[in-house]
Image (cartoon, rainbow, N blue to C red):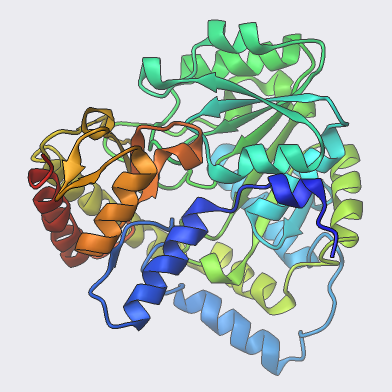
Length: 396
């Protein structure tokens, strides 16, 4: 069977691969602690479950409008009005089968072959692959020299006459960085100046800690509204990853194209999951606040434990639920005779020996680093970090 060059050149999702291997080892009876997937360990809110049950009993198990049920689109508009003071109409909203397909569909509506998209690295694993699907070019802008916050001068240098979009992800996966208002405003003003569309991925917007503040880009630069597509969803803050519901908000013209593209891919998001998400948006605020408190405590715990790790350095995260740490000082050294040739080898040896699953930084376009997710119980965090420290102490 002929396999397309596009499929052959695609890199599989490293986070899903790590999660799958960890689950396989668990099924074999191994005592795995997985810090791989960005998946909260909480149950979905009771209101989501109740709305889903009522939807199924009420026969809401058929096709829905391609852009989503009207009730959920209205609830998304209400959420953005209440939380950010932004006015959107249901026609400006598309409900998708997760935030990931919506990003894909947005890129499909924005870029032609050879067009460029600015991606700030380290970056979520799927951005670059999705750009490649449409024969676009990802222009990578490194942020590691500025605490993982983009410098406007670096972004400006990356812009060409083929630049069509800029992906901004704050709070950031994988670094946990939260962009400050001045940096974010500068990027948005650059987008307005050069007629670049902003894909504003704020899926972690409810997960910010301490004195840090998540800034909605359109609150800072309202004139960017006509060239901004917001990507969000219920997966992270509401602990509803498996329901696969995301939402995109933007100018009704481009959202119409996005809805048309989605109609040829998934038709619509799962009907029952949409009703569950409606229940979450309407009634689960107290659950979100409680989960945020737990994540904040976990963040403080893992930061304290990371400070004790020999041979690695890290920047304290202010958002999401990840710690990003540097292992460059360990590359070339060995663990019980096995050479650590790169960050991927570090993660592989750690998983095989200590049954701790992490994701190599090379998957995020930033080799020599490792991402650890703390969307785990405090007990798992303590045990996993104990094993990681043991592993580090055994490296020659």
